[in-house]
Image (cartoon, rainbow, N blue to C red; front, side, top):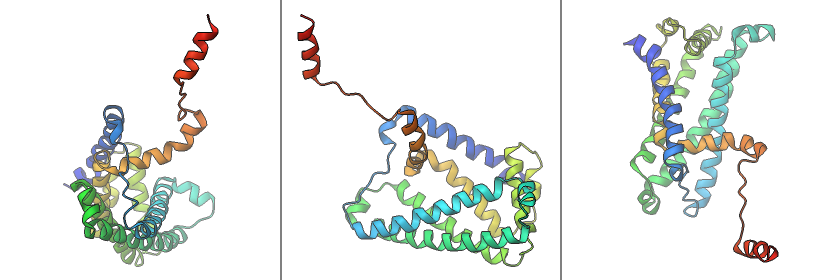
Length: 237
């Protein structure tokens, strides 16, 4: 079971996320939105959104850089495993608390306001609940990490993550003895990836792709009015 959850399930989750997102954008582009309800309880929305999104972005890019950067790069920069571990605990802890506080405000707003709840789907509530649970588990891993400030625990997860992306069949072996809270954190994270294309989370991709679309000018649309068409037709007579 361990090998399936951490050696095979990651490929299933990532494949569904990528293929599902492309299929949704191609087949149902009008559902590619965040379904805003910003006119209702706006102050709570603004504060909660800022805390949640800033915290989640710091966590996401922290995980991305921390797990997928080759260990040799950190060693070349003179960053020890212990220093990297402490940085991850401090930055991740602060960002995690911010995101959890903001997410709690958003959940409270969506659950307690009948008007907002009426416009929320079951999947909206489910994915927000899963994100909050993931944040709780992430904060929970900090207490285990504080017992391994030498950084070796983090090195194991780096080896696992990089092994997944290099198709190492033995990647799951690196975290076989990891604490249960870490394994639950990884499993729930992969499950969120799996559900990604079926939720409003897809709008995140639009934000990440916006600079590229702007640079390529693919976001512009040329509109020709009937007045311009009649003017050209008159000029041709």
